[in-house]
Amino acid sequence: MRWKFCLVAFVFPLLGFSAFASERELLQAARHGDLQAVERLLQAGAGRDPRNDAAETPLLLAIQTGHRAVARRLIEAGADINAQARNLDTPWLLAGARGEAELLTQMIPKGPDLSIRNRFGGNALIPACERAHVEAARVLLTTRIDVNHVNNLGWTCLLEIVVLGNGGPRHQQVTRLVLDAGADPNIADKDGVTPLAHARRKGQTEIARMIEAAGGR
Image 1 (cartoon, one colour):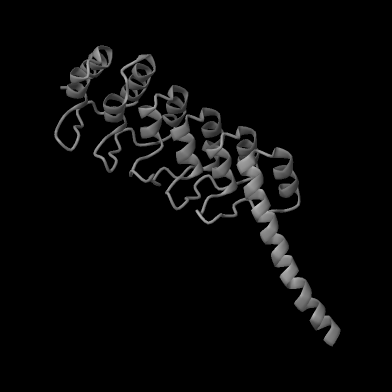
Image 2: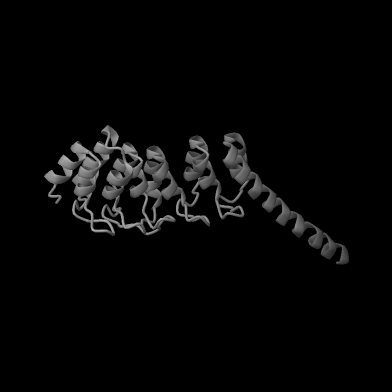
C-alpha cells in the first residue's frame, strides 16, 4: 500500500504540471499564430480559456496579434468570447475595435454579452464606428447592441464618428449605418455640443447633411 501512496503522490503533481504546461503552450501558440500547435493542444484536451498574468485568453491573444485562422478555430472549439482581461478587453470587444467582421459574425451565435464595457466604458460599436470599420459596424448592428450608448467620455458612436473621424467616405458610411439603425442625432457631449454642431465646426459637410436630415439640431 505504501508504494501505491508514493505513486499517487508522485503522479498527481506531474499531471498538474502537464496541464499547466499545455495551457501555457496554448497561450504561446495562439499569440504566435501556430495553428498546428493550437489544433494539437485542443485535440489533446487542453482547456480553451487559460489565462496569462494579464488575464488574457488564447482567443484574445489571437485577435490581438491578427491571427484570424487561430481565432476562428478557438471560437469553433468553444473559447469564451466574453472572457475579460485586466485591461477590460474581451474577444468580442476587441474584434469590434479591430474591425474583425468575420470573427464577429462567427461569435454572434456564441452569445456575446452586450452589457460588458471596455476600459472607456464603451461597447464594441463605438470604436468600430470611430475607426470607420464599416463591415464590422454592419455586423454589430445586426445584434441588439445599444446604438445610443454613452461611454465614460460622454460620447455615443455618432459623436465618436464626428469628433474622432475625418469625415471621409468610410466615416460617412458608418454615419449612415448608425442613423438608419436609430442613432439619436441630438445626444450631445458633456459640454452640450451636438453631433451636428461638431460636424459643422470640423467642416464635415456630408456628415452634417446626413445628421441634419435625420433631425439633428
